[in-house]
Length: 432
Image: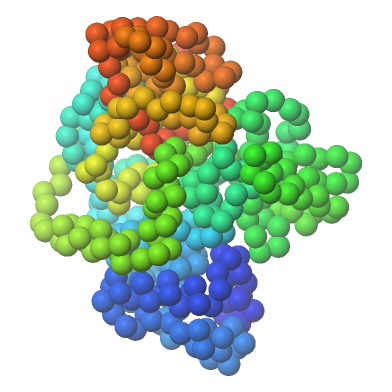
């Protein structure tokens, strides 16, 4: 290892030496092992080439910097589940690629994904809640699912300080990148439908719109973000990783601010749920096989295996799952058909405007006579007005509140495909 690489890794993540010290110490606390502690003095010596890192400290640096690990953590006695829990709950300030798994971790039938058991009758045509989708819990070997995965997909987390595409792409969002799509597509259109790319310039990763004019390349920021666009005179200085074709994002901005405050003010409040979950998972459980992979195959082919790996490390106790069917276009193009949403059933109160922009306005999951829909809503006397997102082909609907329409809850999180996938998504359903 070259000392310069250690410094570049840290700067790529926008971390100070104090940040690295604090994050490594949180990892040591999670694992209850002081061998993973790192001091600023020691890190400074490493980056100047005066000290070679020992095994456990090097492992801590790789985990903090989100670098590919292979089998290395196993040599230190760290399970992958601990790594993912730690990384999910300690977001970085900068946008960085995120490694979900690699070939070395696929070990026959030994590694299992604990996933919801999908009702074989669920066809994805109509919007539905989890009570109509999930019929139990089960497990499937990773090797059985990886065969449907695309090797062209990459993932990244948008940094907590990366505001350049907010509020379209909020900080903390998890994005999927198709590395086959690197050609720059110029042109104007609705923000939600413009091609979004992940690029690398120097040691920094950025999500942005791209515009090529002559010998110049412009990295465009969102007009509402307050960030400056960047003009690069030599396009060869920019590496286009690929086009962003899927995004997992939070939609409850108040909750996001509270979680960020919780993270920055008192890290013990973040670590406590992790430790509690690790204790719960230490109990012996009996894993049941998933009986039908047909639906999961389509999801894996579209999203890749990454979100399914992350799924098993999330806390599902305080929220419910919903699915936007292929015939439900009320929230399009912000939330596309085929999107999975997280519903807070404790929040059914219709929030009144005005809102600073369309991205701040809340979506609700609503039960209607023909099933469910995801949309904006308004109260008008005894009626509930279902409001489509601007650009949606749908019309307003007025239903009797409490009789014809019932609010299931507020949508606070969504995993949505972007425009190119919609064409494939509609094609897939046309054949079903």
